[in-house]
Image 1 (cartoon, rainbow, N blue to C red):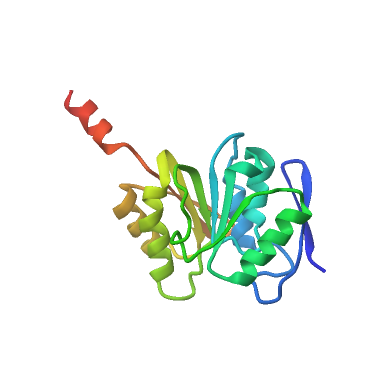
Image 2 (cartoon, one colour):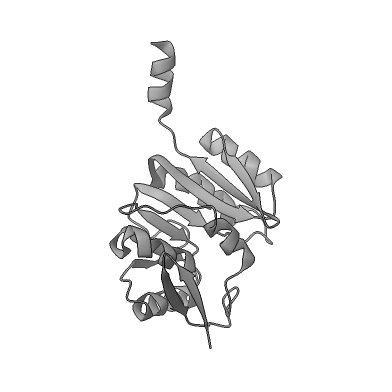
Length: 189
């Protein structure tokens, strides 16, 4: 059956795939994260671990489909995201990729992820460590989980800081790539 979700003044139609996380409705973590994000026209956005593509499709409605990339390691997720993008007339870029491995794009304003966190932290660690260099200066990695300490510590160690917002029982993390060389020059000068 699927479901419909309204964002940016438009209603999206999303197909169900029983093998994917939250196949017939948007999950609460994703909605918590989306409630904290502001998309602006022309931003370059990556929906990392895209699942059915809801996050990236919402972004595409504002930033433009040509500025949105989806990636997921699961072929079912990539196929579903592609179908949902086609159904909604949003020709985004979709890549089958284990994290960033097959993605040849960088300079993102936003990387958005609802990572699997009921396993070990190996996936999240790769998303964070490799994501830093995929962002442009000033770009942000935004993640949502229920686990505070590990994510706060890891994001702080890689990015030099992180902002945490609690929403509906979930932690939304925002870590910004900063130009440390320029910041250190200003402090010394």
